[in-house]
Amino acid sequence: MSKAGIIISVLILLLVLERIFPAVTLRENFARLGRNFSMSFFNAVAGPLLVVPITVFASRVQWHWYPHYIIADLLLLDCWIYIWHRLNHRIPFLWRFHEVHHLDETLDATTALRFHFGEIILSALVRALVIIILGVPFLTVVIFEVIVTVAALFHHSNVAVPKWLEKPLSFVIVTPSIHFVHHHALRSDMDSNYSTVLSVWDHVFRSRSANPRTLQMKMGVENLSDVSLFRLVLRPFYRA
View (cartoon, helix red, strand yellow):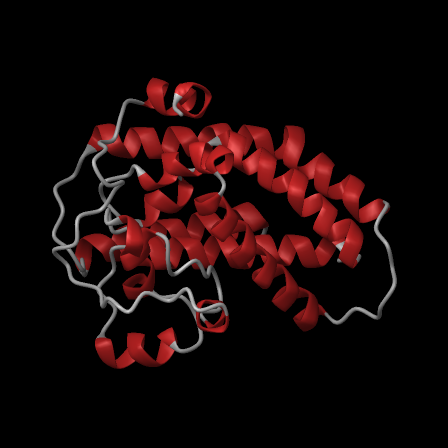
């Protein structure tokens, strides 16, 4: 199955499960879903036009200074994406773009699709340097992209994962209960739980929130509200 086929299949599965076994009972908001899928469409266009060529170029000029093992490379990339995510919260210029993702006032699988295309392009450019320096093979990068996207769809989802399953899973991977806290509108919670695939990085770098997930937590950005698709696209370019 192709990369797109895997991601679409997982998305459809989670969208169905969210409606059968929801963690939080939500009212369907078609305007919001339209915004999220539209942002995803922009990124799907940016992918083959910019992200893929950047990644291919980086894989051709990379430095080969140590023997590569796919597990080690995947761990390095997962650590890198933790660092990049944290930088997106700490550096004001990067936050301009990443804020678009956090403005979503509802958390479900479609939130994992809601990233500003500017953030996707910036991420690809910086990741290219990582690929060049570490010499990560192109195939490994593609595998990691699939893993990251599937992980993001899962931990953003509104699926009610049984506690007996989610607790042991949370020691290894990022689960919905962990990432739910990251989307809490309270800034101190938002600036925590940065891990994407493996949950270990927040423990290593001491960024794990001590607050447990409560279903009453308000999603979004503190003191701000979600805006229209047009304003989301323009927001990074005019908001200080």
